[in-house]
Image (cartoon, rainbow, N blue to C red; front, top):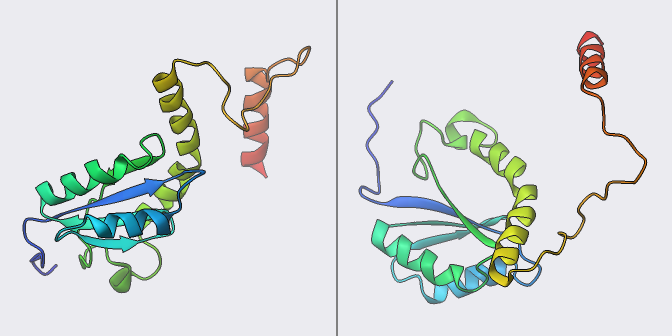
Length: 154
C-alpha cells in the first residue's frame, strides 16, 4: 500500500448532527457559515461536516451548539476527507461510517429528550415512546430464543 500523506496536515474533521423540530441542516449551515472563520463547512443530509484547525473547529462547535443545545450532536471523523484509504471515490459506494450514522440517527431524539428532562427537571415521556399495555405480558426469553433459532434455520 502506498504511504499516505495528508493534504490538510494538523486539521480535524467532525460531524455535526442535528435532529431538531425547529432547525434544519440548511439553517444550521447558514448560521455556521456566519461564524466559520477559516473552518471548511460542508452541509450534509444529517447536518454538517466541519474541517479545520482543532481550536477553530472547537470554537465553531461551541458556538453552533448554543443554537439548539439539546438537538445538536458532534462526532469525530476517523479519517480526513479524501483519504484514499477510506474515500468512496476509491472504494466505491458509501463509506462504512455512514451506515453507522444511519443506525445512530433515530436514537438521537431519545438522547435529546433526556437532555431536555435534565435541563427542565421534568418527567414527561418522549414523543412516540412505546406504551406498555396493561395485561399484556413481556416476551418470554425462551420464546425469543425459539424465534431467533427459527429465523436462522429459514
